[in-house]
Length: 81
Image 1 (cartoon, rainbow, N blue to C red):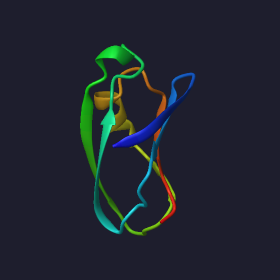
Image 2: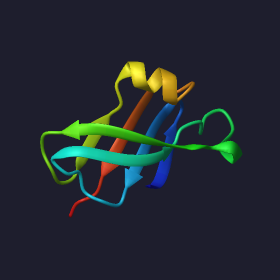
Image 3: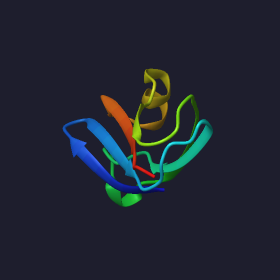
Image 4: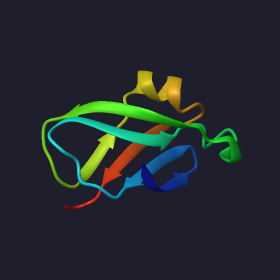
């Protein structure tokens, strides 16, 4: 689950307390933050990563348009181990 969400205009950055792991990763994120934060419904985002550790993952445009309405860019920031 996201530890915090930073909004800069329509650019979202989700901070996650765990490190990124090589292979399949799953993260629960509130997706409709820009529409109505009180009704933010969590969605599980699954993706494959080649590396592990701290780092940023950008959500692809096709997935972003469907899951994060109104967002121009969405980034998931993983913490250090």
